[in-house]
Amino acid sequence: MKIAVVGSGLIGQAWAIVFARAGQDVVMWDGQAPALLEAPTIIAKLVQDLARAGLVDNPAELLARISTEADLEVALKGVGYVQENLPERVELKQSIFERLDALTPPDVILASSTSSIPASKFTASLEGRARCVIAHPVNPPYLVPVVEICGAPWTAPDVIDRTWQLMQQINQKPVHIKKELEGFILNRLQGALLREAFRLVEQGYVDAEGLDTTVKEGLGLRWSFMGPFETIDLNAPGGLADYAQRYGPLYHSIAKQQTDSSPWSEAVIQALDKERREQLPQEKLADRRLWRDRRLMAMAAQRNRWEKDDTGQ
Ligand SMILES: NC(=O)c1ccc[n+]([C@@H]2O[C@H](COP(=O)([O-])OP(=O)(O)OC[C@H]3O[C@@H](n4cnc5c(N)ncnc54)[C@H](O)[C@@H]3O)[C@@H](O)[C@H]2O)c1
Image: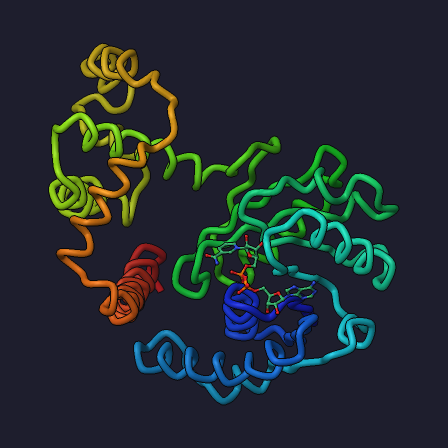
């Protein structure tokens, strides 16, 4: 199937790699000529990095599947699926979806990468609103496979199904969010953890380094290959219900202390930032991001091996 990637910034480039890596033809469009012009160069570099990490078999073939087109109407000719990646502003999403709805036949799925805006906020007035859906990736989707699929109340079930199947086909891991909600699932979980992390530092229980160590040397090790429900299922002899019986009262007691919903305190933000900058000076942030991406690549390669072991391939 031919895929249109609308918006060729950070996430658009990453989606192009994901689709092309799985054998789909991709045409990229962007409203700003320089962004469209530079996208193939950035993509080529990213693909070389992925090939070096063993995550892409044939970089030249992958790159040959990606083209760019400055005219939106031409870009959309013959596509079966559109992945929109414009900046996170509701009026931009609304206007681009109006154009996409007008320029494509009714069976084409129109998906948005939005991190936070429910589809009902920008598709309500569209004739083809039933074919609009959110497919929210995590950056960068060629290394982090989960995709949150969330429809508006009027999104056709068939559109959800087809988007889900496409995501599976391109080796992503779709999660269906059954009702619209702010932040979808991933960012709500992240928000709950961050809320408590800020609170614990603010109240003097731990510093930033100790908190990060607790996650990376503790909770995060299991979370990189199984979720919190499977974790607790394995952490009591009789499984999840046994765990709930043993530890439910503890978590309930903690939850009663976690009702404060005030914003992250400015004083704690400043203190945390100071601690982070002592450990990692501002000028080293970019290097550290490259280090993070190399770690993610090594992890993705390992996870691919595990998946092959698990499926006996
Ligand atoms: N960056 C992330 O970590 C991340 C993760 C998941 C989802 N998202 C979502 O993906 C979407 C894109 O984010 P991004 O980080 O790629 O942003 P970005 O700024 O890197 O890319 C946006 C692209 O849109 C183009 N653009 C800007 N205004 C335009 C207009 N009026 N018409 C046409 N093109 C226009 C820009 O030239 C740019 O190439 C957002 O909705 C964001 O919430 C981002």
